[in-house]
Length: 362
Image (cartoon, rainbow, N blue to C red; front, side, top):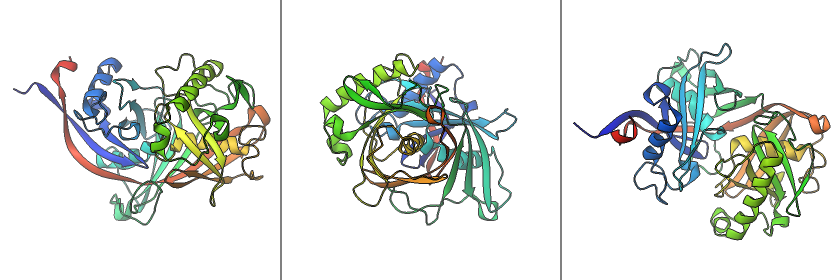
């Protein structure tokens, strides 16, 4: 008998991220044991994730865990685990918008939802944050399709569009649009905006942090003084935002803004927070869009702010652009984002069994 345990899984790309997707029933319920299983599955703690299916970056070690929902509104529950690539840790406190794009197709693949039309909308509850989402996928003749003409920057080729609507996103973790009660805070002598829309994010101006805001991911990841400066501010900001000790949590995230260089609204470099994101997280893009739309934040003066709602903000990231639609109600410190709209794509890469040592699941 083998000393390894086999777990059914789908390996999927969602937006500009990827990772294994599991059915909740196939995993341990205890979070400590679950963390050990996921760390073994992706091979955390090695720069190449050589002993697992990760690829050495936090965008390739993201894990959606799905199941039928008992919620009166939702069809599917989405429990997200951010498995760290370089550290043997797992964060269960946040969610992921890019991997949200995998939830509807994975639900169909696993028999949790049956398409009945050429387009299928699935209501999804985020277990981690209690957020609500609607994901609309293409199912011509009630058959799931991944092929299509939609292109998103950061992913080669084209695929079928997946339309994501995010609801209940204002104050996702703190209950407040601006958790510190300020449009801007001075931390370590630098101005930042601490905002919570879908994901809490600490937002600064690239120029204040000694960069242009147009650097590529590789150059930024080599800039250790920059990461030290951001982490010191992030930890203090987390306390001010009511998030407590964030030294082992990916929330809040960190982003630096600069004027657009091409035809976008504004340029952004986004951090996860201990690595530079190759593009931009779908969740945090909504927080950054709200920051752009709010007078008095660090975004003011860096771009021409749209004056009407709904508004579309186009972010320039290292590999291209990302558009975010926001239905926004400006009320000063108590502004509300009613809904956000993003189009992503996804693809099933492989399926089968992933093996972890029996010794970690007892």
